[in-house]
Image 1: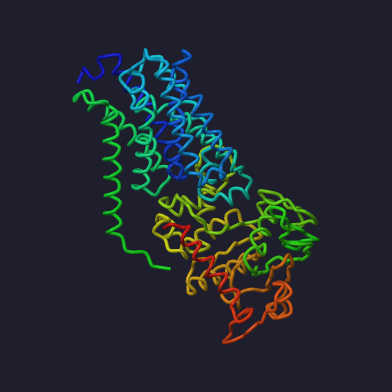
Image 2: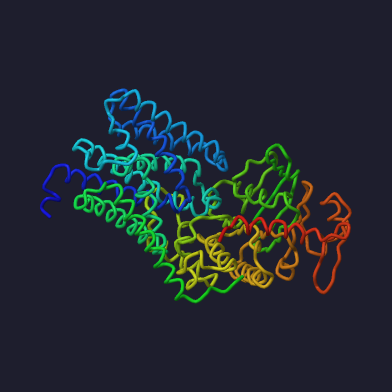
Length: 275
Length: 272
């Protein structure tokens, strides 16, 4: 067990995964509540282009990711309802973004393993500088979420009423999606752009199956995300299989268990009256 | 003082004139049913009273004050819509509206918790509110939405189609509940609906919208062939049978057909 924390790269991995888990558990909770999980997925795809583009011009991929995902989030928020139902257009933009990312990688052949790391994550490759970067990102995201959580929740549950009470739906949506962009960039450092869903959506969705209470749901989402992220690292250490695989496996397991538990609980409750 | 005053109000929606130079007054502590065909401006009128829609002409006053967004005198219950957050409890859903326009964390202080309890008590939904929204029936959800609209003790309630997607039995329950609250609290209520019949016996006056015009009065004054023919811009017959009133055009029941159309749409959109 001493070996687990005996190396710098392991301490960095635990720290980075822990920071990202807390952030994505909370941001993901609202993402699931708003039914915008696809936005997280989409932002991670455009993030890939940002990361590879940054590498190409000699900037850290983390900041390339952050720049593009936050800009993408703001853009999605501003377009708002006009994006609804444009699945094909959105899909084309995402595919083009991934394609461009691939082209940037092609130009920068020195980083052959960079593609896999960006796509599927490499938590054991996180250095001390990135941990500090993630800590800053996480603090910023939590502070922003703390500031907008109240109108965000209101606008999510009752948009028309929130609007009537003076909440700007557009502003709340833009701020939140920028936040999702930040969180996506953080997640991509741990599990890669293709698997962002696993940390941002999996724990939050499982938590919402297990409790109907708001505070409890958010705490549970964070606890699950932490368990999955750290559990994945521990299992990777003992099996030598990729950490991202273990994190996705644990996330899927937690979601299935939550689903089964909710189903069992439903069976014991009386059926609500119709009408 | 009047709850609502409309003075020469014209409302436009995307270039189309929805209401054209409407003037009317609704008294405090009055229950007014808002009726009219789809697109007649029932929701648009409510949005204008809430200050969400600029007036093309005229002026609206609520309890003597000009309209503005965030007016605490008004409680609002929007039409039931598709929501993805149905796994949350009814309590969390109602509580989200307490000071929901302030920045910060969604925590309830003591006064907030009391306000939620009081609103839930008024509609008899305290036990109900512990269950997730997804498990509640349409009528139970409407009671929670009604509780939400009562937060902050408004003097005027705007209820947009509370009867949609409810069976006749539940419709009657909701109407009686709103009527009881309206009397107990001594507030004014605008209650929009597709069909007049569920509201008969509960309402004080009818506001019928159609063709950019409006007619406000008692059921006997407004629900007549000449008035409705003018609003619909087509010959309308009013048939009274068994204590119910049917608005017919060319042998078709206008209200029922419109209702059925919308009903199917709501069901499909709700997804739960």
